[in-house]
Length: 289
Length: 159
Image (cartoon, rainbow over all chains, first blue to last red; front, side, top):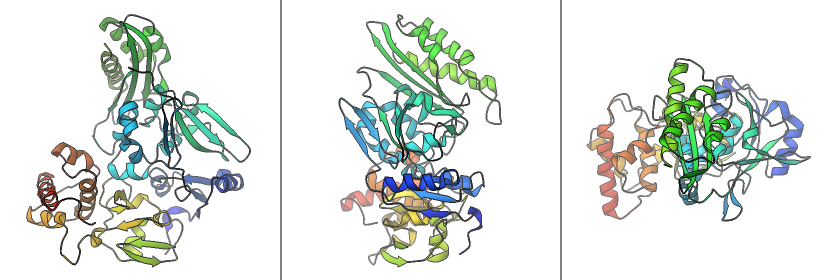
């Protein structure tokens, strides 16, 4: 049966990771990895992406891992679905900001097929896993047939739907360190609908307070710049300081005006997005007061 | 390629780029699986893969191999309708019926993961299934009725 929507790509189902890397070497620019397909297939239907080759990952054994070690932290695999991740007790108890990011996405059906790694590789500025991964200081393991490298998530995104991945590379894991004990973390997704909608503003906060002093403050912003990003300058305003409502107000105002450059579109004006950033950062930090 | 759909095995030669919804509707004639948006955004195409709800319009048919796929046509048994099917009828949760197969399949997945959901949990779980006709309240009633029947029987109905 002819399927006109797709530019008739060739579908490959390699049985090992090595075969994937070989296929990427061969087809690189004309190939797309498919793990869940929840971003790739709509894009192919809309002809935004028209690869000649699709390389499937789901049939390879053991790529859907969630491995936790109390010292080394957490590893997620390239075929690990959003659903499997959010249902995992360690994610819910130790990494609630990641749970909240994932659970805010799309729908149950999409989360049962889509993957965490797919979400960051798709790299839209509003990616809901990104702010959580940024405040958790995740590292991305990238493999090719020739090499393996690890990139901190803060360096992974390079532009709208752009990452540091070269055409013959694939992400083979995300590593998330064990979070500091006592950290207060939260993800706020601001969007017109509760389902099947992207974030107009996404804010993740991660705060460690001891004896009234903020020992560590991490703030990540999604959907308000060309990439998801940490608000490092805002963080510096509060790290090492006594945490007070006045300081929180200052930090959230700074984050809203100086740490992001939101667009204006049919979903919201620039000023409204900035206001949402201000309120979300404020509320996230207030949780640690 | 080899498929297992509604507990029947199929060997089919298909395009690598075919989506699961097209395979189910056009190759196997399971037209209970509806194409609403064909984009992953409405839930009308929801089927179960190994018991979990997925959107068949954003799944490659090729990647559905080696998974148990159940559609609305596969729910009823020789003993009769699934409690959810019965409840949807009895509670008037069906108007035009277009969202219904997907809504029921998603509900089967919900009750297998959470046999006693609150209304908030039902709404959150089913937020990927859009209904234009009913306003959802009778759908909630139907799920509540079905869950009580399934709890009384003592657990998961075979899906």
